[in-house]
Image 1 (cartoon, rainbow, N blue to C red):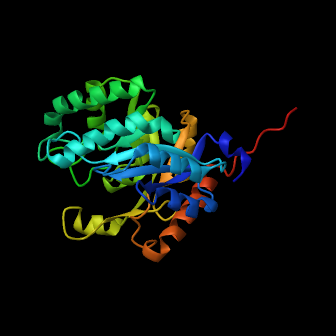
Image 2: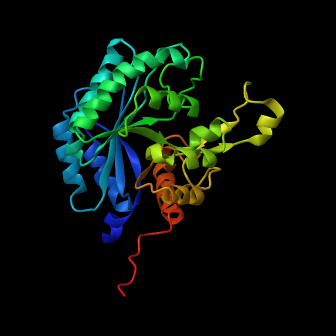
Image 3: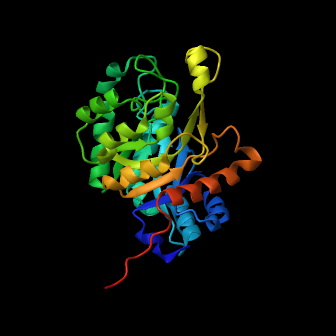
Length: 302
């Protein structure tokens, strides 16, 4: 890897699943040039020993210059079923162990009271995330809330409150902390038929992490059938195959002082999947590096 990677203000990486094979997966794909990895868990950490996993991951990274951008858990920490309580416990454990992975960022869904409008979840959100944010602040850790709707909306849903700018304002008013921000991606905006760039210009100071995921909108389907019927009008895409202008996105991030990671969220593309998954991800890696302006080049010493 280029020795100047450590000087990149915006690194390009990918999401990987946390578990027994995390370090082996890193070793396999690291030679492709990934500069960072976001380690993700779905709902629960299971039997994962985070300290042991962190050691294996750090050994896999060795002196490559690549880094762990964040550790993440995606579930519903606001509800009370056993799996939801496991999610909340996972948040706490990731906050406590983030430093062992060399990161100060933990990300995931907010959760929500299932089937309830967003405002009805705010008291529970405030209770849970005030404690999580205080725990994070005490350990020098930041929290970023993912912006996927998970098929929810303002009035109902199962997973996440942080999918709409109006809800972001409510959440940040409920828990006012500089350590609480957003994990953002343009895909979810496009699927909601929202132009991501004006939103990005407004919210970049609160964006702590970016998921590299795009979308393609079939406007002919929207114009003929609308968005409430049986015809699929939007497809999640790997960057480089969708509608977003990533050169402009990265320019806006730089313009507003963003220094962080864009980690590719694969396994969604309807074309570059299965045997073509890594083909698509490596294309996205190289594409995003070009949109970034290429590799970091130091100025001459004069």
